[in-house]
Length: 369
Image: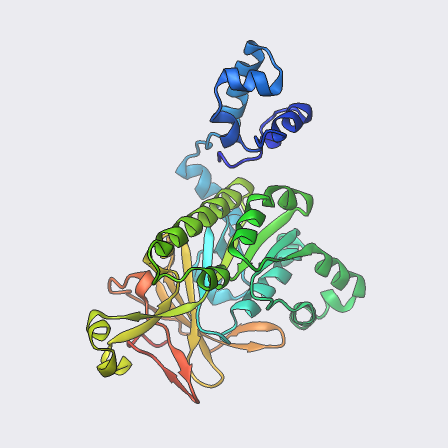
């Protein structure tokens, strides 16, 4: 809450402009100053400064709510994915005010899923949408406007048969291409005004791992700590935005090979089939604790793929089969949906099935749907 912009905390535009010249832009910046410093920078009396300190403190204090209030508002707390089995497991869809991560190998449809969600967010509320804009941060130059329109027209042919509706949908998706860690962090820290101006109902960061893994060689001393600090700032900023505006945030992540101690000592004899190493979500176990919900997408065979609910505060560990078509994701063969015990598997170390050549390879067995 301390990351809230000062102009949104009840401070006049004139005072905000004065303070901004001294790089005082957020509630945290303001509250870190002494009353005497504020008097000097803002040109106010001591009594006025004390009154302003009370106003700003109250504006950025987290509101107190009860479990009963949350339960009564449960219908407002989720964003439907339009995939009935997934929504049912997640008690309504992707939770608002939290971070949902989609991780998996290249080609499994992470960006396709994000574009499908972007279309859904722009739809009217009576169609299950959010009737809002989308903030889409693309770090891999993977976003395709043509594919966005194709998903919209294929998934909702009647609604998007009117060209003006297609244009309005595309206008509501605000795209930012940020190709360095600093650019991504700066964009996130300036996102409040963009969310307000386009009435954003959804934030997407595709992908959180791309720029981080390019810029931080974790084999070099100190880089792992620097990377963790950066990711911590990104996660904290996104959590603040999601909670402040009650909107879902969706992140995509890449995969990495988690090498066991045995393989680390003897790389020449390392054999993935002997569980010497396994493919897992990138960015480490600390990052896995930053996200509230983790969905893993992985290969099942040449056409079919699987989505695993690997971490969720409300859903059991479950596996869903899906395919990708012109209209985006389709869940298939899940009529007799089963859920599984996760058997204590750490979501940060959940093994992921990847495709090698024409075959799919899983370094550790997982339940089949």
